[in-house]
Image (cartoon, rainbow, N blue to C red):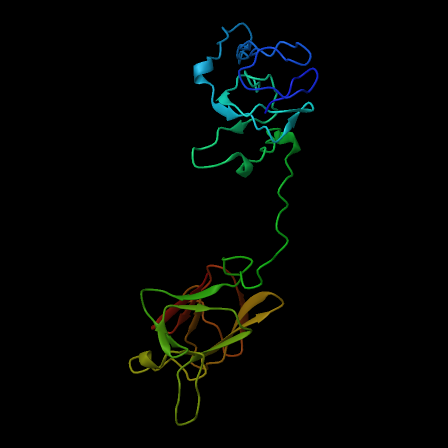
Length: 251
């Protein structure tokens, strides 16, 4: 049962005068506030009671020291029109299959974005994820859609990710197996040697050292022949001519 707001005496719903103190218990007229204009000097809109949602005035909870009246109805401006209880967070009206004991006053929702806690960046680092997908080493590229034998397969690109790469023609009888094998071109080009040249890296620079005595290794052209034992630095775009058979470019 609701209590008189003046003396706290219990009274029956529908009673308009408190029999204990004579307080007027008739329903309170609720003045519907106008909605705040989004922009100054724009017309305001009056909130219709019919548009407002229904709420439950919970008699098991206190509002300013007074129990709710237990009525279900429309609350405008968070005020119960039956008892005048002001709810900071009104409880939505109960579905028909629930009871008052299952309802708890909802907590206020923080809409002030300035109080939101910023999301801290994750300090976890996945050790299995590479730092960069770009290759940190150059490639030796065979020109003209030709291939060489490298690590058991015919390829046109060889990663220069080691300190040395030998190039020449394999000789199974002598147990000679260069890293980059040119044997398939030897049948029509006798100027390709078993130990033809050596690509190597030194102090973050890349070089070629000619081992062949055949005078068949050209540096950027077939006319600039490198002598046996000669070494030169190779840079991006440098072309090495291996006799008339293969041209390899550093990229």
